[in-house]
Image (cartoon, rainbow, N blue to C red; front, side, top):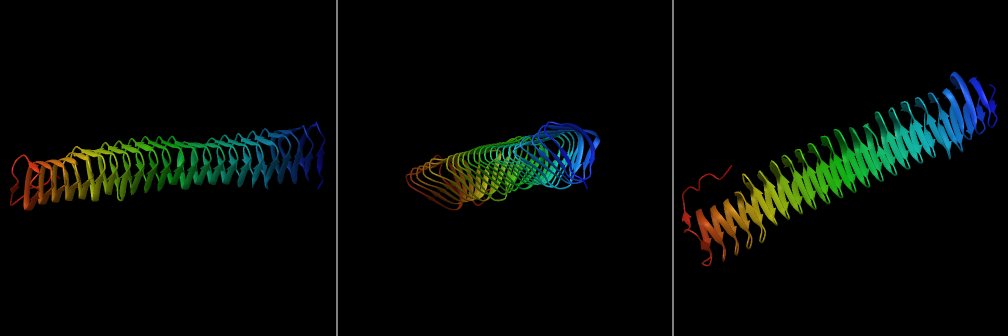
Length: 405
């Protein structure tokens, strides 16, 4: 095997190199179809190959390497303190480029590390991708993990893990394990994921399905959203239906359709749903509004709850000065001091000092000092403070009748 050397600034035509190729800075290699290097290709400075190229391995130093056609590297591709531009397809084992890698055709590689900017224009398949700055990918992206210090802007993805320090924008796909973003995450189409952890804002244009969603700031979902656990530090809007296990929102949450959860829903501010809300336990610090609210265990309201067709739970607790619009149906219903409600149907109903209700229908009823009731029906017993005010006398009945469904 014989090696080939190309001196600085030379323009040369090559077809095949039996051994290694070593080129100094600022060379231009013209190719009849394809340059095949049996050994390693090393470029010491900027270089240009005006065609396709194949080699055992490639090393580029201190400049811009441009291959106008396809590049096939059987081993590794390395660029120290330089950039690499491929006009066609790229196939290589591991790729390590300090500054910028741009590939016009499809790329199929092993591990990719780029210190600055990675641009793939017709798809990328890799075991892992690590970019110090920005990653822009067009076409399908298939990889184990993608990690960028700055921004990621890609299209259809099939990944295990996706992470960026600043911003991620993608079209659609699957991220099986975790998506982690320091700033903003945006998906313009259907998305399936494991865990989604975003420090700032999330915008989901299509239907999305995941395990855990944790957002420090704002969540906007324009379609249906399914999850195991949803945690929002700020506020969220889901224009479709929401379905999951548990919800914990520090601010407010608005759902266009139903909110159906098998575990606890806790909202520090306000909750609004266009359909029904179902949960094991519902805790509202501020205001809740829905067509119907159903909790298997407990409803606690710190501010207000408003329903078109009622709220129902084993236990309903309206804290001090809170209020309810729409029927309350439950096993045990308690209105703390100065709380207000409309119609109440319960096995045990308690109105503490100064509480108000339009109508109380209960098995066992206790009415505290200064409480006000429009109508009171009970079956077993009623304990009424002398200073309570009833618009009509309490009546004991043999049958309370059916509560609202």
